[in-house]
Length: 64
Image (cartoon, rainbow, N blue to C red):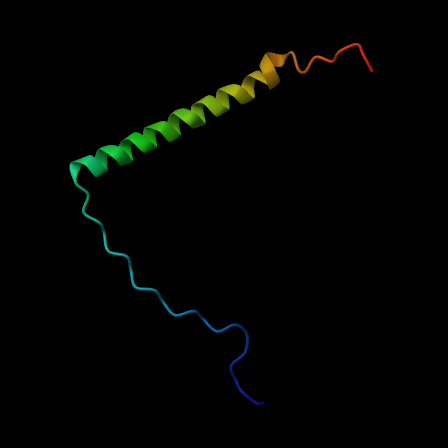
């Protein structure tokens, strides 16, 4: 067992992916998806600023 190769073997390189040609419908769908994700991020940031349920928190009942 005297080999000079030690450590992990390097993985084989994958061929580069070819660029896909998108038509107008695909481009519009991709843009729409990006816009939705951006709007969702903004809403999340806004919600975190306000806190849980507008700052009032959960209300507990008087009963045990």
